[in-house]
Length: 361
Ligand code: F6P
Image 1 (cartoon, rainbow, N blue to C red):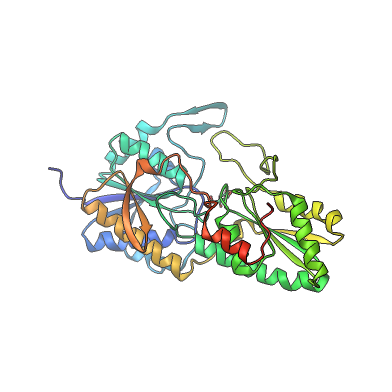
Image 2: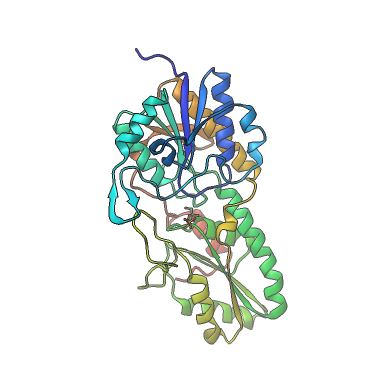
C-alpha cells in the first residue's frame, strides 16, 4: 500500500478566472491542516517542464488570497507539454516525459490541476502516464461538463451586468442602440445571464444562430412603442445563420482561436436597418480581472478543500464538481473533449423569451 501524501503540487492553467487564488488558498490551508506540504508550480505545466519554476507554499504565502483576482502561480493557455510550440518550427515538441520526471524529482505524490477543458485534458493524459491527478474546474465561460457551475462565472456576469446598467443610461440619452460583446467562447452562458440580469432587449448566443433582420425588427417595434434605445448583448462566439465565427487574428499553432469583432459588425449593420445610431462596446478581459464575488469565493474554497480531501483518500483521475449544491467527484475521462453549451430547452432561454427578449431567431 502506498504511503499517505506528504507533499503535493498545485498549478493553474488556461485563462485566469476570479477565484483561482481562492482555490490555491483553500488547497494550501486544507493541506497544511492535514500535515501535507504544498509546492506551487508556476505558469501551468511550464513549471513542470522547465527548472526553477516551483516554490513551497505556506499558509503565510496565501493569506488574503481569497480576495484577489488572477493567480499568484501564473498561467498560460499555450504550454501543452505533449505538443509544446517551438519558436523556429511549426512542429511542436513532446516534453511530457520531462514533466513526469520532474514531478517525481520534486517528491510529489499528487498534482492538483486547476483549469478549463484544455488544461483538464492535459491533466488526464498525465494521469494515464501514472501521475496522480485531482482536477478543479475553472472558467468564466461556465462551459465545463459535469459541473453545474464553475467559479469565475458569477463574477464575470456581475461585471457584464454592471456594464449593461451603465450603457442603458447613455443609450437612452442619445436614442441609440448599444451592442455589448461579452466573452464565453462557444457558449452563451455569460451573454444570456448578463442580458437577463441587465434587462437587455436582445441576446445573441452561439447556441442560436441569429438573423439580424429579426433583431432590427424587434428594435423598430420597440421604437414604435416609444422606447428611445435598445441594448443588444452578443456573445463573442455568436454567428449569423449560415455565417462563420469572427476571430481577431489567425490562430497560431498550440493556441486556441481568439474570438472577437462580432459586436462591431452587428452595430454597423443595425444602423441602416433601424435608422438609429449604434455603438459597440467589447468588455473583453475586464470580465476576468477583479476580485471574485462571494459566490465564487465560496465555490472556489469548497473545490480546493474537497480536492485535498480526495488526495487524502487517494481518489485520483477525478475532478471536483458542483451538483445540486453538493461537491462531488467526476472521472476526468467524462470531462475530456466535451463542452457544455446552453441547452436549447433550458428554462433560462425560455425566461429570456418570456421577458420579451429577442434571441435573433
Ligand atoms: O475561456 C475564457 C476566455 O476568457 C474566453 O471567454 C475567451 O474567449 C478567451 O478566454 C480569451 O483568451 P485569451 O486571454 O487568451 O485572449
